[in-house]
Length: 354
Ligand SMILES: *Cc1c(COP(=O)(O)O)cnc(C)c1O
Image 1: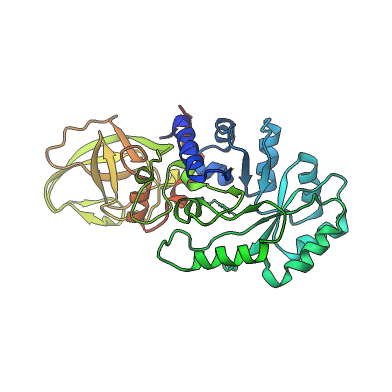
Image 2: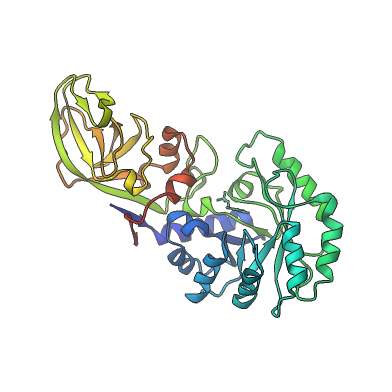
């Protein structure tokens, strides 16, 4: 069981996104172990990305310890004084998204300069300073001697993957209205913002998913945008067996073979992070051919219907997603999003860089 990670595909995707971004600079989002792809290796492969973003302080420190020298933004910011000191010490940029963080910053007066992105809530109502509070917050930040001026400004979209929805256009308008007169650099767009909303203009863009070759939009895959899948999740057939018509298969006899067929048992299960809730019919590739899951996914294995005429053998290669089978399609079958599939792989899956 391994996830093959194509560094060439990652670099190709960075170039495609840079072309899309034009003058805007790319902040490559590497949170959650680079969406399951291996944070450190991805950071090393992205030496040309002008900046990197992670979610947690620890992730940023880990990158610095391994010599990653680009600007690194910690998207979640700090929530205690010790973290603020660590960020200053390791030269990590922070997001400031709430009043509690502002109060902490005022009380702590860190010894090193603090480089921050002020996050503005333009309609997602998750994180961010509200528009009406902005003048006060900016004034208080201006009197924090440790804060580098001018502060940078960011917002985040809640529905940018829905191209027919007005909400993103409204968020863009609100952000520009609030920040037009402010001198700091600006950043709005995630992958969907960059690929779908040409007027999500700013100085920086923050793609995550698309870097890994995955489309954020329903009903398409990254290759429709010229992107290449970075992760290909591979396993093997650990058993091949004949199954008579009517036989129950797997835990709970969840499925009965309607006709005699050959079954393949794949050495992958929910213990590897493959969702137990994957329904019958979810596709896999066996020797390059699409076959459906039948019966329940178990901890260490799952079963596929190879078809009565199958000649596949024990040890043959299985692709769960990636090259030849977009993870977007698998996610759609399972009723989740590709983000979740790639980030939930367990430590049992070896990441193999190539
Ligand atoms: C995760 C994240 C991104 C990247 O989002 P994608 O949809 O993966 O491109 C960008 N900005 C913020 C604030 C995020 O949390």
